[in-house]
Amino acid sequence: RVQLVESGGGSVQAGGSLRLSCTVSGYGYSIYSMGWFRQPPGKEQEGVAVIDTTGHTMYADSVKGRFTISQDNAKTTTYLQMNSLKPEDTAMYYCAIDAYLALTTTTPGDLGYWGRGTQVTVSS
Image (cartoon, rainbow, N blue to C red; front, side, top):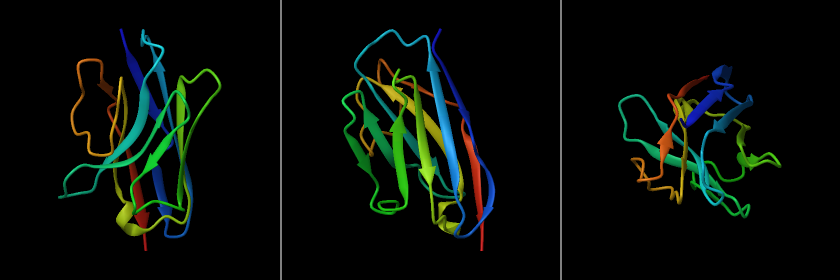
Protein backbone atom coordinates (compact mmCIF):
# COMPACT_ATOMS: atom_id res chain seq x y z
CA ARG A 1 0.00 0.00 0.00
CA VAL A 2 1.43 3.35 -1.04
CA GLN A 3 1.65 6.01 1.63
CA LEU A 4 2.73 9.64 1.39
CA VAL A 5 3.41 11.34 4.70
CA GLU A 6 3.76 15.12 4.64
CA SER A 7 5.11 17.28 7.43
CA GLY A 8 6.55 20.71 8.07
CA GLY A 9 3.61 23.01 7.51
CA GLY A 10 2.73 25.76 9.94
CA SER A 11 2.32 29.47 10.44
CA VAL A 12 5.07 31.99 9.76
CA GLN A 13 5.39 35.71 9.22
CA ALA A 14 6.14 37.14 5.82
CA GLY A 15 9.81 36.82 5.00
CA GLY A 16 10.16 33.68 7.05
CA SER A 17 11.00 30.12 6.01
CA LEU A 18 9.50 26.67 6.27
CA ARG A 19 10.62 23.28 5.03
CA LEU A 20 8.09 20.71 3.94
CA SER A 21 8.91 17.00 3.82
CA CYS A 22 7.15 14.16 2.08
CA THR A 23 8.13 10.53 2.55
CA VAL A 24 6.77 7.83 0.28
CA SER A 25 6.58 4.14 1.11
CA GLY A 26 5.29 1.19 -0.82
CA TYR A 27 5.75 2.71 -4.27
CA GLY A 28 6.94 -0.07 -6.48
CA TYR A 29 8.42 1.85 -9.41
CA SER A 30 11.99 3.04 -9.75
CA ILE A 31 11.42 5.93 -12.14
CA TYR A 32 9.00 8.61 -11.03
CA SER A 33 8.46 12.23 -10.22
CA MET A 34 7.56 13.75 -6.88
CA GLY A 35 6.18 17.19 -6.49
CA TRP A 36 4.37 19.78 -4.46
CA PHE A 37 1.07 21.35 -5.39
CA ARG A 38 -0.95 23.90 -3.47
CA GLN A 39 -4.46 25.21 -3.24
CA PRO A 40 -4.84 28.72 -1.83
CA PRO A 41 -8.15 29.46 -0.11
CA GLY A 42 -10.86 30.06 -2.70
CA LYS A 43 -8.53 29.49 -5.62
CA GLU A 44 -7.61 26.76 -8.07
CA GLN A 45 -4.92 24.21 -7.34
CA GLU A 46 -1.52 25.05 -8.80
CA GLY A 47 1.78 23.30 -9.26
CA VAL A 48 4.65 24.56 -7.13
CA ALA A 49 7.67 22.37 -7.85
CA VAL A 50 8.45 18.95 -9.28
CA ILE A 51 11.55 16.76 -9.20
CA ASP A 52 12.15 13.48 -10.99
CA THR A 53 14.51 10.61 -10.21
CA THR A 54 17.18 12.12 -12.49
CA GLY A 55 17.12 15.26 -10.37
CA HIS A 56 15.49 17.41 -13.01
CA THR A 57 13.37 20.13 -11.41
CA MET A 58 10.57 22.44 -12.47
CA TYR A 59 9.23 25.46 -10.58
CA ALA A 60 6.24 27.73 -10.86
CA ASP A 61 7.30 31.24 -11.84
CA SER A 62 5.80 32.56 -8.61
CA VAL A 63 8.25 30.60 -6.45
CA LYS A 64 11.44 30.62 -8.54
CA GLY A 65 14.36 31.91 -6.53
CA ARG A 66 12.50 31.43 -3.24
CA PHE A 67 11.61 27.73 -3.11
CA THR A 68 13.90 24.75 -3.62
CA ILE A 69 12.79 21.17 -4.15
CA SER A 70 15.19 18.35 -3.37
CA GLN A 71 15.22 14.68 -2.52
CA ASP A 72 17.23 12.40 -0.29
CA ASN A 73 19.70 9.85 -1.65
CA ALA A 74 17.15 7.06 -1.44
CA LYS A 75 14.74 9.24 -3.43
CA THR A 76 11.95 8.38 -1.04
CA THR A 77 11.73 11.75 0.65
CA THR A 78 11.27 15.03 -1.11
CA TYR A 79 11.72 18.38 0.54
CA LEU A 80 10.43 21.82 -0.28
CA GLN A 81 12.52 24.56 1.26
CA MET A 82 10.46 27.74 1.22
CA ASN A 83 12.24 31.01 1.88
CA SER A 84 11.09 34.63 1.72
CA LEU A 85 7.53 33.50 2.22
CA LYS A 86 4.73 35.84 1.20
CA PRO A 87 1.10 35.98 2.33
CA GLU A 88 0.11 34.78 -1.14
CA ASP A 89 1.97 31.53 -0.44
CA THR A 90 -0.74 30.68 2.09
CA ALA A 91 -2.32 27.42 0.94
CA MET A 92 -2.80 23.74 1.60
CA TYR A 93 0.27 22.06 0.17
CA TYR A 94 -0.02 18.55 -1.25
CA CYS A 95 2.73 16.09 -2.06
CA ALA A 96 2.33 13.86 -5.08
CA ILE A 97 4.13 10.98 -6.74
CA ASP A 98 3.53 9.64 -10.22
CA ALA A 99 5.32 8.17 -13.22
CA TYR A 100 5.37 11.72 -14.53
CA LEU A 101 4.27 15.01 -13.00
CA ALA A 102 3.91 18.37 -14.62
CA LEU A 103 3.20 21.65 -12.90
CA THR A 104 -0.18 21.50 -14.61
CA THR A 105 -1.04 18.09 -13.15
CA THR A 106 -4.26 18.26 -11.15
CA THR A 107 -5.22 14.67 -10.51
CA PRO A 108 -3.34 11.40 -9.99
CA GLY A 109 -2.51 9.34 -13.05
CA ASP A 110 -2.75 5.56 -13.15
CA LEU A 111 0.47 5.31 -11.13
CA GLY A 112 -0.11 8.44 -9.06
CA TYR A 113 -0.80 9.11 -5.41
CA TRP A 114 -1.35 12.29 -3.46
CA GLY A 115 -0.88 13.07 0.21
CA ARG A 116 -3.51 14.55 2.50
CA GLY A 117 -1.89 17.96 2.59
CA THR A 118 -0.20 20.22 5.08
CA GLN A 119 -1.30 23.80 5.76
CA VAL A 120 1.06 26.72 5.28
CA THR A 121 -0.09 30.10 6.56
CA VAL A 122 1.95 33.25 6.00
CA SER A 123 0.89 36.39 7.84
CA SER A 124 1.81 39.91 6.81
